[in-house]
Length: 618
Image 1 (spheres, rainbow, N blue to C red):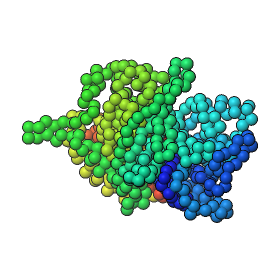
Image 2: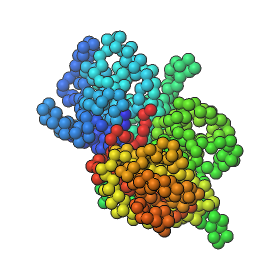
Image 3: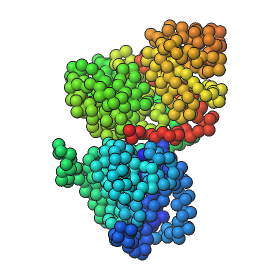
Image 4: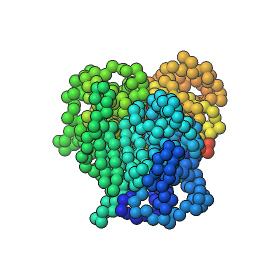
């Protein structure tokens, strides 16, 4: 499941058309995260009167209207207005108070279709409706029980059990409920999935309440927000918000909820960050923003030195925990996808694998959690596991108020700016810059943004290379040492956006299987910039040439003749920096290659098939 959004207005009169468009716009601000269907629920005309359902119950208000559609949000918009005309729905009807819910779905249980879209309903009369982000891991047990009691299921989703029996749910979820039994009210809760509530108030007691999942990428302007924590239930009624905390005792009996008092936080977001500007795609914009994002990442953290001031680094909140970190028996870097690649040089544990293996973590360990969104479900679960074992937990995220940022003892904010579009780009380079060792790279860190700006000039060359590769079915990328992670990240970018098979391979394994694939048709990128692995990488190039491999060599500026004297290879020359910083430079032209490949192949750059921006399901 992917994105949930709700809007409640109390004592603030709006026409139905305005409410519907606000729900659609809320979904549009979530669509960059990836989805395959969408839906909304709004109130029916009050004059329709109560309805008696098959159970014999009489609804005190008309059952809500539900509109669902497969595909893009604009498909939902078109079908809604068509159905509105057919049903003679009055779009000019005004509501002083109204509660609407909306959803974008990333299919996990049941194929993309209107019947599997959200909101999901309890049955006839839409007595209870829910939108859901996450996965209910015990839904089959609940469904079998409900079937025995005569309940009927229409969809293949795990979500449909929730409005029928919203108890004993296991898994990660964020939920928003709507019911005609409780008109103009919403109930929301969460466990493991992110949920924020935004409140807009005016002096005359008119109130608009927005509830969004992952709003740090979705709020259009600055908002006052309430951060919802795990096992909390939020009740919104008559312009007021009440938060209750549910806990279980050792016998798993649900204890009486306690009322929670919590102040509002302020989220700052520049509107320009969620616009494409003069760029065709968000991914293109993010790649080109990397000199600035690196500058922001290092701003106020690097002390240049000189005039009797020592060169150094300001560690912020980490400084209070340095003694603990120095005493650590091990330092673990934990992340998924691009964040895993950014942490690879530090020999991390993959977050999704850590829980499965129940890998040992001790009080003497420091666990560093790397996540662009700060909401990655696997990484969050690993965080809880590490905390329960007494480890010091450190965050490296790009989202200040995210669950990982809040749940760790200390951390580093990337300051890379908003990431729009599923494929992570500038967060990768900023994560890499934050993780690397200190003394040997200080001077090059200052020059890093300008070096990235120089390498962005390869855009035309990468576009030409992409044109040559656009019809290929597969791509191999060989890296070694620091640049093994670069090879993995390049392959990940090519796979996730251009839908071409790509594989990142540690070059030392070339003769242990991958060499069998090499012929004159298979394109192969070898990353061979100047570091301790250069001679070995040169040997790899020679062996691949002997097998008539179709080579693309990435080398340090000035090394083209040295790396490929017969000029049979295509060369990508990049500026030289300290070896541990070189991956930040090397990945940029490969990001450009993935971008142009995607455009040439005719796929959606910012919303790749089957993928979501922040994986909040397990």
